[in-house]
Length: 492
Ligand SMILES: Cc1cc2nc3c(=O)[nH]c(=O)nc-3n(C[C@H](O)[C@H](O)[C@H](O)COP(=O)(O)OP(=O)(O)OC[C@H]3O[C@@H](n4cnc5c(N)ncnc54)[C@H](O)[C@@H]3O)c2cc1C
Picture (cartoon, helix red, strand yellow):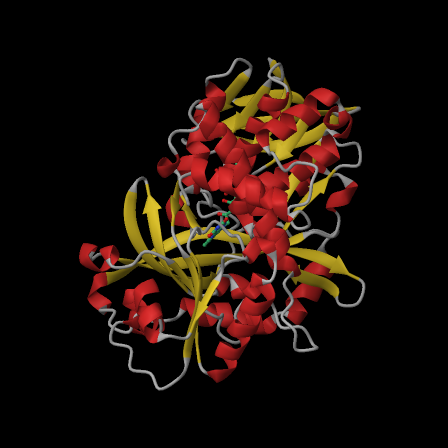
């Protein structure tokens, strides 16, 4: 028997959960089916322990503000990520107000975002970055200090026992956040399950998909509990399969998939076991990525609140892997090489030998070497109080490039069919924080007609007050919106 559904969401992570929730808010009559291969949703990258939980807003991530060739700090990327995160905050706040999400502390908690650097060159960079960012209304509340007593107050563990002759500096935004994306995803899906027309099938792995008519897809999923294969037909399919979105996109056969490849990078944290140490730190302190490291390897000492419990993590340590998911197969990478992306893969491989070397080097680090890296941030860290934990996988995007054959990208990208019947989310950075902005992009591409209707426009505005306006350009709107979200989400 074939199940018919309007919308098919493949994968039960934050992206599918966000898109499903938005679509149900926009049109409650839609039938939506979610297929998840694991026994529970949010068990891959979206789980709290598998990502850093940073509400990426450009406050602390130095890689979002590179130094341009003219010596100026470029802030464009930080502005757009900050504005995108404000959309997420508005969406979550509106769901909290509706009672669709539990009280905010169950998934988001105030955690100051700080950048910390040492040495003359980096201090000069941070000062310049602060000047450039704080001149813009999105970053007007960012503080800067070189004063040791202030730094001691902002980040006691970082300053404890620090015996450095080098100049130090930090910036801080007090209303930064830690987000438990696992808890958020589970709450979104649980709210969807309470609505008529939504069904979730766990332990269902999608194995095949093909277009069977105009804007119509047939999808096969294997039920691992019964061994049976289920057939579904849908008018719209979203590939929210995390790292495994690429192979599914390739299976779809849409011409827009041509040339895309993936390069998986694994992650690990040092996790602290001493509650007394955990208690003393309340911030996300980001540093500068070591030379040659990919942007997602920026080290940070991170307060986390996962499943309501405080934790302290340091990392991530990147590593080389051939799996596209944490629970994926070692053959994922090799199976993803197809005639359509061979040139991109080879091109990207040729131009990123240093990165591969760096990642392999990371894998072979000893515990003592990792603790040494931690001691740059927390000089009095004791090796015995920290242990290593595997994080999730990030599959970086490889795209064809006329000059080099292929290039590696570290962002997030939506790939969609020209007829709007299928969309996939590739890449993982800034990731979950900007899931709302990414899913708005899916709506724009695949539900363009409905989105222009007065009903959908009004509902979009109810979900996201700033929808249709620019928070980058409109300082008054930003002030009003931010006041509301910070107070509703209890981040202020
Ligand atoms: C180490 C690390 C640190 C990160 N830090 C941050 C951070 O600080 N802030 C931030 O915003 N983001 C961060 N991210 C990124 C963020 O975690 C991801 O962008 C986000 O979780 C991706 O969500 P998703 O729904 O696309 O994928 P996932 O959460 O991975 O969900 C995909 C789901 O699809 C399922 N699936 C896969 N294939 C199939 C199939 N064939 N059939 C059925 N189901 C399938 C999987 O089982 C999985 O449940 C980090 C990621 C990593 C790995």
